[in-house]
Structure formats: structure tokens, C-alpha cells
Length: 401
Image (cartoon, rainbow, N blue to C red):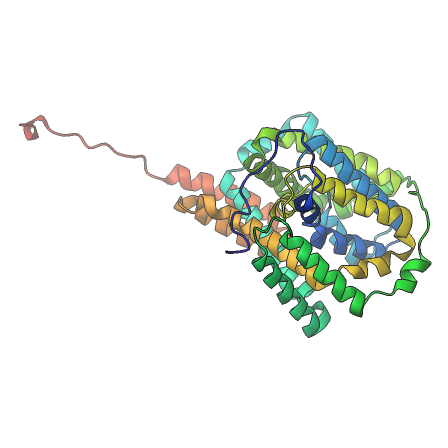
């Protein structure tokens, strides 16, 4: 049986239920392949406080689990994280960017513009955005994560994929837990320094950050503007569509996502947290590995909360427990789930062509998500307008005998 067989089946418990079983534990790490490298990269190059970032990120997970009651995790903003890593942007500007993004999304939500924009974007374009994100994640997994440790890492990744394939459908040992266990064993054997971990243990609380007006303005120009198109396409519209597909009883609307998106970013930066969002990749990842309730997100949140409260001083040593090849395998499964979502538009030739073209643009071009969303929407509307109206053939009475 394929690793992905049945992975998108929308099996959710009764609204409000919260479970903490093996499947929820496995699902809890369905998004770690995206989040942990971005958080680590930002902490390495900027003056962000590790304890503050980790604690606030964990609290955001707990809040999302409580509010949504489903596997709706919180992720670092990808475009913001990439720019911070590349340019070494400092904590005050990162906080300013978070406040700017939160305020902008709050305006879109309060005015109802977010609903109007969502109504304009066809489903095929959303599928294309999900396809483009899946391609990006898969490219990152295969191009950077899996080969990160050379041949030992590649062999580890293959072992994880084989274990996940053999354990697909196993109720006692979820596939993701086997992959993580293999990764931890590999790390303990070759990479982890217990002395370095022990040296950094201690209790730490978040450090507040107060950005000035200049920090907010610079953050808006440098970080917020590149992020907004990706947030609208992936974090809001695509996530809302996927949540409706997988958990229709939860009644997750784009406005509801807009509210929690904006509130997270208006609060988290003031306590040293990084700008965050919801994302269809995170939802797909938790669901793919077994999460069906907010329990998986609670577990994931406590992972970061405990890491920040007690192990922030040895964070760089602790993250070695999760080798990049294993994170790459998790990321690859997440990317496959996203790309498989295009299945429901395949029977309709025009919509499938739109999704395919949108996905390629989103994957290949700078600012591809914004361009893909605009080009895909215009192409689909124009194509429908140019299609000839169906004609009816009149039958002459003389023909009827």
C-alpha cells in the first residue's frame, strides 16, 4: 500500500474533542520539517532571544488548538524567515514587521475585504498555489535536507521512507513515530553532545520587545510587503479551503483565519516571538501523519514551550536530535499531500490546466504566489468568457413524421 493512500480522508472526531493518543503524537511532528529549520536559521543570524521565540511559538500553538479544535498549527512566516536569514535582520525590525502584518490583516478582516478577495479566487487557482508550495517543499527536501549529512543521511532518509511504507495503516506504531525514532537513534549515535545539552539547562522567561515607529515602518517595507501575497494565497485562502475539505464540521472561514492570523501577530512580537501564520502545509502535515484533533497541536506546542522554558541555552545542541534527512522525509510527505490535492480538478481540463500553470508560476518565479494568483485568476475568467455559448439545434417540423 502506498504511503499516501487514504491520507486525505477527512476523518475528524466530534467537534470540540481533544485526543492525546499515538496518532496525535505522530501527527504533532508533521510540520516540524518546515518550522524547526526556519526558527533555527533566524536564531543563528539575528539577535532574537531563543527563549522568547520558542516559548511564544509554543503558546501560539496552544491557542490555535484551543480555538480551532482541529490540527490547525501555527508556522513562522516563510518569506519573513527567509529574508531574516539572508539579511540578518535584527529583533526590533522583526517585531515591527509582525505588528505591521498583523495590522494589515486586521484591516482586511474587519472591512470584509478578505471575504471578497476569497470569493474572487477560483478553486483551481488555490489548487495551483498548493501545488506550487508542494513543489517548493519537495525541492527543499530533496535538494537540501535529505543530502545534508552525505550518504549516511541519504541512507537514513531511505530507511525512514521504507519504515513508513511498511507501517502504513499500523494502529500500534504510526509511521511518523518510526521515522522520528530512527532519526533520534541516528542523532544519539553520531551527532548529539549530551554535555552541551546539560550545560544549557535552566529556567528562562520571554523578554519583551518594544519596536519603535521606525522599526515598524522598515519591517513593513522590507519584510511585510514580500510576505502578504504568500499569506493571502497559502495562509488564508488555501488553508481555509483545505480546512473546509478535511474538517467541514469545524466551519473554518477565511475571516476566522484572518482574525487569528492578525491577533497572533499583534501580540506575539511584543513578547519576543517571530511573525507567524496558519498554513495549508502545516494542516496537511499534521493530518497526513495522524492528527485529527487539536491534541496534535497541543503536543507540538508543549514541545516548543518546554524547549524554550528549560533548554533555550542549549537549543543548538538539542535540535541536533532531529537530523535534517529525517526532517526532509517529513517535508517530502507534506509536499506530496499538497500536490495530491489537485486530483479533484483533473477531470475538468480547463481547471486542471489553470492549476498546473499556477503551480509552475508559484514554484518557479520570484514573488510567484502573487503572480500565480493574479495570472491564474485572470486566465480562468478570460477562458470562461471566451468559451462559445452552447448552441441548440432546431429541428424542422418536416423532419418529424
